[in-house]
Length: 390
Image 1 (tube, helix red, strand yellow):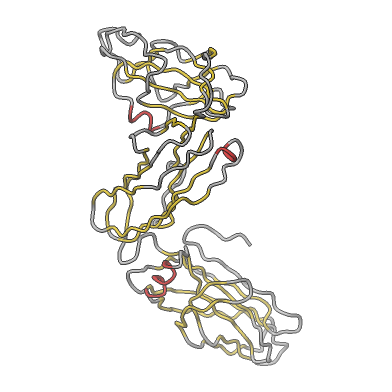
Image 2 (cartoon, rainbow, N blue to C red; image 1 turned 135 degrees about the vertical axis):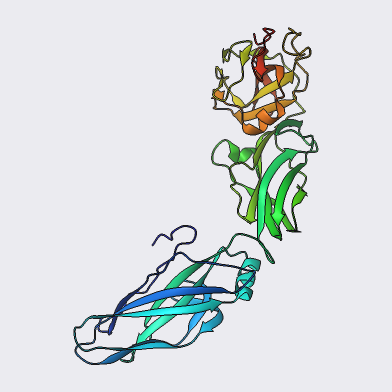
């Protein structure tokens, strides 16, 4: 059975053995979450179907436990409720028996689960009858841990990744030093748990395979900003790398927390760059949300970088194009099988209003620059009356 998402009850039960009086069971409850800062009161409705063959009987459960469901058993963390039972009428077999229960889940049990890295715990009851059928039927109410850290409700309002030079993508020589950090804006108090992970060039051409580089355990209080410094990034293999910060607690969407960097081979002799045919945007175009940068593919390309160089002189000037070896102020790395891309939000944040030059550079599998497109102007910001938009 596929478990439902956040806050929904998981209904898990074992089939009854032929001949037993208990036939099946279910849990009918509203979505449940539990808090680590205070005890949580739950309301649970259990329903059992009982085949009594015309004889009176009893359906019961000796105890309710908080634990972790594991297929046919519940690993017990703490017993939180006692016996419930009901007499079964002989009127119309089979008979449905309903148990409405109110139970308190201690905050200590939730704290213990958080420290084990669990996203949920389970409230379990095993129901039996008085015919001596020992296994009974195990029913489980899934309880999701409320977002936040130990000791309080922690919220992360903003997380931004940057390399140690302030860029969102970069190219470094083989064996060079490269670091990464995250700016976190938070409120409330609680524990942040996260892992720094990297995928190296052996996997980034296909499905990235991430390995853990380091861990983050930081207790945050109040409202403010915190810098999370990552480990030194590997640069021993030439090619494209992906690095990410994956939050375990509290939850943060991972898609926005991935940066790319490219490692160049330092042993190769520089070669003249082949040209790349660029189809858009046109020289002097204005950058818009729908703007896409397009170019012809380069055979053997392992990655492309869309580079942005600031132009001197503002909107009205027509400055000289940058030197071929000048360092871009912003850039976007894309895989070698791409032929177009739109700039990301992170790149847009670095493009201040004015005139910029952009071009596309291709790198081979060893990290060497092998081709480059022509520099074209692009205008960032509102239209101006001076005609400098191109």
